[in-house]
Amino acid sequence: MHIAKRLVLILVVLAVCVGCDQATKSIAQSYLPSTQAWSFLGDTLRLQLTHNTGAFLGLGDSMPKFWRHVLFGVGGTVILFGLLGYGLFAKHLHRVSVFAIALYFAGGVSNVIDRWAYDGYVVDFINVGIGPVRTGIFNFADMFIMAGGVIFFASEFHMKWFLARCSRSAR
Image (cartoon, rainbow, N blue to C red):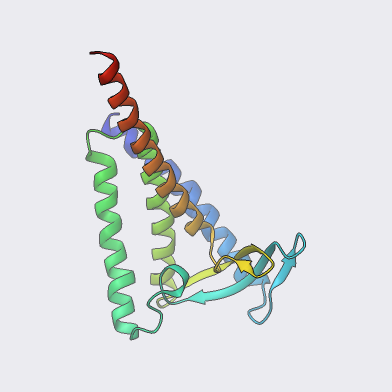
């Protein structure tokens, strides 16, 4: 896949995902109370506004603010630029892998936008589960990151399996 096509794919995914995530976060901040959860579908889905100063599931939220800023804001931005470079220039990547990287990148960008715009926190508001088995509170950007990771590893595993199988059958 040519670099220009990769760039277009990444930019389209970026625009759609960041737009969706930032819009839903804005709606959540405007309408959801921060003191209680709204429950839907027999309490399978809860909407609850949270400001997450840590990483995944609040990891690192007890660190001093300066170090959270360095690690999650500055470090996250640097990692995202590296991921963008990999998605654009790694020669072995297939379309599905580039799409997966674009999803991961877009989710990361949207969460980093929050960190820079909201003094170090990310807006989270979705919680799913059944009974006592529940996820942490997350947002659409987190879903894009998870989907990108799953698709990337599945596509890379599948390609290695497919290539190994083709080389065996060619013997």
